[in-house]
Length: 389
Image (cartoon, rainbow, N blue to C red; front, side, top):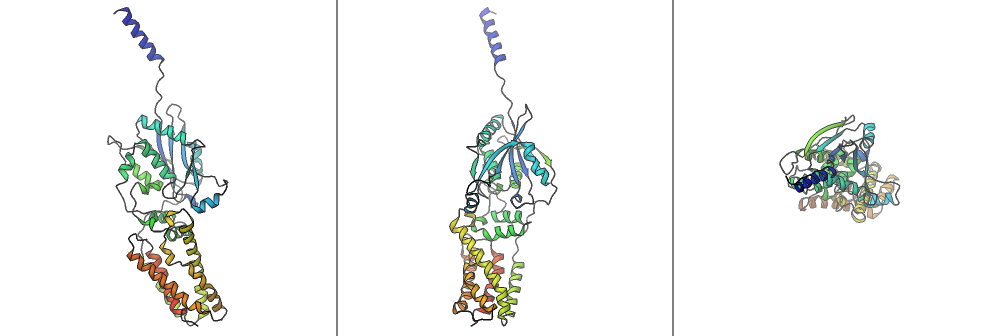
């Protein structure tokens, strides 16, 4: 071999030895935390784990942080303009709070291409910088789970969304919210009464991934471009030691209808005892009036789209507040004013109108139980008190 050829070969070998060795791609995983017992823990949580195979260090990218000390925090929360942030912290540190509260945590390692894993790790590191970390929170469309879902989908070039967007299990925002809030009665009551028709359209598997456990289910079924499963392996990092995630239950109307008819029968049985009737009606009208005023405020004064155009306003009518002076007059044994005789019929007529619109609407709202409960009560109170002088 000529000397020139030997020199070229030697130079190529030296350059190969001196060239930096490409760093191994990070491992990417998804943490799924089971629901907790505090109200803001009821829906579970998740995060993305980036592990360095060389050092063994694992970082948890957690989209669930907010700062309650920031100016105007409560007002922004009420208006639907709350800001959350992405925080990067060591995996063990992130797990500690769940270990202490007894919440189960699973880890799904994903089978990403090295380029996809590197790009996702770099994107998360950039987003976790203080100037980029904040995002506007929405309970259904921009929460900790949807941020994880969207980051994975971007790394996969849209492949995750294409697999999930065309499929549905028939779940809705309302059904999922009420199911997960069920252990806290005040919480499921607020969701069921406060959500409008926006919350009742069937969700695709992509949309229902706002629930971390649903996202984990969908990842188990997802496939790479070559047909292999996206989830390489799954491990339980922490056992779940408290109450499990609530299961799905059918939404039945007849128990609510029986309660409404029983209440109406009791009202009519007390029609000759105005003080007893007023003692029953006053709390009901107070709750209906306050509830209706809150619903109207959510619709007209906030960015909470899921609460807009809430047809429970036909049942929880702010006009009920105008009935309270008449109820207090009856409690004192006095005769209410003339307006009192017309208002119960007006409230009942509006409730009936809401029932009719339920059948005529192109986008129905799943409030049949509340119609079955409250409409008989409004009609019975109108019959019992609407003609009283």
